Length: 263
Image 1 (tube, one colour):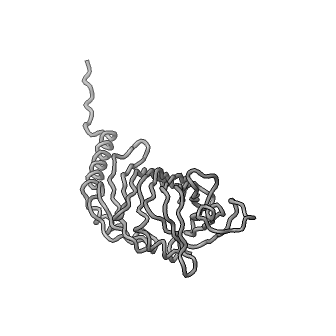
Image 2 (image 1 turned 90 degrees about the vertical axis):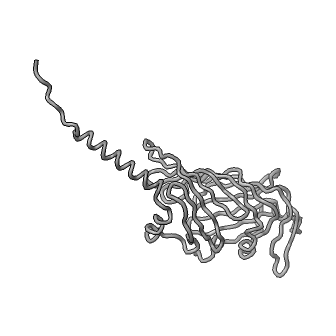
Image 3 (image 1 turned 180 degrees about the horizontal axis):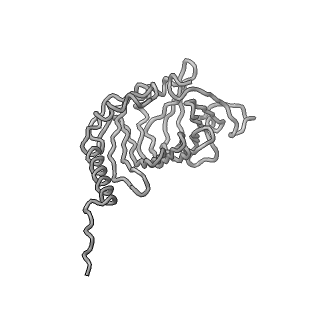
């Protein structure tokens, strides 16, 4: 009977697994315990943000934290909490909430490898707190809140490859600039549907019980916004217009930067 040759305890395969396990534990410890503010302080010099976006304060941990952000002069609070990652699918789920003093949008973001992400969210927007921004851009002001029933965005190849959303407004008073005066009318319940277009994302506004668009806005990848208003919107507002025009005729078109300073 021959003696079995003794095998070393730390064989190459076992050593590799131990090193990999130790690395995973180390990374997990960093994510759970390292302050998010310290990470942002180290990473911010290498992150390029638009001039309209400023990160003012980061608190909490990498695993669960919050940040104060200013977008075009308007303050926001973004909070997040990481879920357990999927090693097999190379995906990291994150619960995220964006809120102001009166509005909130929350949902789930799934970040995938190498550079893709998907957002599913819903929320409520108090339009009144954005009145200054709306007035400065020459837009129409509506009363009440807008509920976001569905918002899905998919990011890949450095652009949004899918956009799908539905927002609803219960109707009410709408005011808009008319030279040195202000026009005003009462509108029925309206809705806005979001979809993907070749040049970016399109938002179509229509009456909830009606047929055809009242207005649509295309947000392009270069930061520009193109707005079209149809005669159907004029009819909903009860404003005079020649009877020769059909509800599907475009009566107003404008193209401008979505945020000030974008060209």
